[in-house]
Length: 582
DNA sequence: GCCGTTTTCGGCCCGACTGTTTTCAGTCG
Image: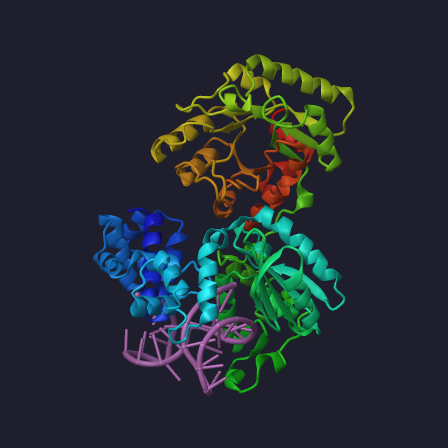
């Protein structure tokens, strides 16, 4: 069994234990263990072989045994027994808002409910409402939750969520009672997908703000409306939470609600090591913890003017939200070694863009004008090659024609923005390329991508990509896995091996900035860039308004610890030409 | 189940909101 499958098993064990009413800390130990294993960036077999699994934080003796057994045999008696003792439907019920392990256990124990369908019937017949601790409203909420289960469970691509969230934030900032307002949560951390929208406001008069929020346009349902916190469901099922705190607690709360959870746990531990206690209400002396005064009424030991002051109090450099994932940022901030992350303004031009010659919606001239309007100094065109017939890929003749067209455009002096000739050349099933070397040589650059035969085995797919990377006329590799976030899994490919091959052959790997792709995943970039891998943040634009999507790529590049020096298109035109040998 | 140690047990983040209750349990983030 491979690592990802074992992670799933551990997570399921956690959920099953929770439903059985096990000790919550034991449950958490499985969840932590799953996470620790998931972020392990070494080969699991090697770690087990070297007897080093137990050294991983969060994996102890019991988990070492279970993981090893699963890895070697693909089976685990403990898990099988646990699984057969809990009906399948119970785990599904965990998706219903307001239903947790205790309530699920109760309807199962007392009403014999084992499936979502049976649960709905029990709610409708009034059986659920008559249980102790349950009531009419609980039953109604469950029915509603079952009805909207799919919409409620859905995640959303960051870019889409941001388009919804940003106008709300703007409106919040206009309210006179609002002193400050920010996004929080995974949206602020710029995760590639987000589950809900978090807003944080500083105000001394929360009432009117809450009233506005719960009645604003687009609210379908109010799931909570309190003094400091409200939650609403928007039309498309997206949940939005608003929290309002006193102005002097704003930055503590902002840090807290930005997360991630794992980052916060580390930060609180760090506070404890210094005799302090950190929460959304402030930093307090540890020993005063059990006094019978509300934290909201107690004076914190510092009054931060920004989030940076909180980090400073814990002897750390400021950590930007994108890096708060407990993936080394605590250690780097302690050592004073935070990276200078790339920003939107560092981007000087963009490669990998399409025109009407293949499946784009704008002409070469329109794309060039749009790039220039965005302040970019260069634009790389890379229309599809002939094997992508579904995208009207160019054959040799049409590509040569386009090369001439681009040359004429550059010489016309009509645009300040320089255009590079290129191609998104298909990597064929056997790893050969859709154009021969003679034609590729004429191009300023080329992006090699996979658009067919997705179902090859991981071994064959990896070999196919590596073979393409060994072609001397290829500049960069396009979308490494071909994933479409929340829509299609990527094809099976051994990414670390592909990174090795790109490094060995001096090739760039693209960070495809389409909000649907964000591929190669940010989790691989830090290590790869430290080894010298060069990145190109490519919008893969098929229309003029998609050129700006490079910004979505910058977001995840920042999550991947990338600095301008790691990114080709942060370089000025002259240096890019030199890099491409022009 | 993990972890650390004043080293083998006891703590493990913690506060807000809802719906039930009549002071609190469960859920959520």
